[in-house]
Amino acid sequence: MVTLSVIIEYSYRNKGYGKEALKGLINIAFKNGYKEVYDIIDKDNINSQKMFSNFGFKIVEYDEMNNAIFKITKEEFIKKYGKIK
Image (cartoon, rainbow, N blue to C red):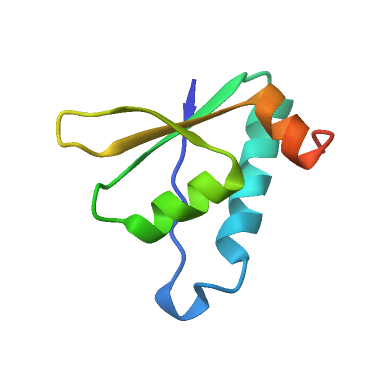
C-alpha cells in the first residue's frame, strides 16, 4: 500500500500543479508494482477532497477523527488516464 500527500504553496494553487504532481506520483507507485494508492485528507480540507474525487479517488472509509480515506486502484487509474507512463 502507498499513501501520499500533495502540498502546493498557496500562490501556486488552482493552476493544475497539484493534479500533475498527483498524476506523476501515482504513475511512479504503479510502475513500481503497487496496486492501490491511498491518501488521508482532513475532514475540513474540502478543496483537497474535491481534487482527489475529481481525479478518480473514492472515499473508502473515515478514520477516528472523521478524516476521509481516499483510494484509487491501478485499474481505475488506467481506465481514466490510460497507460501507466
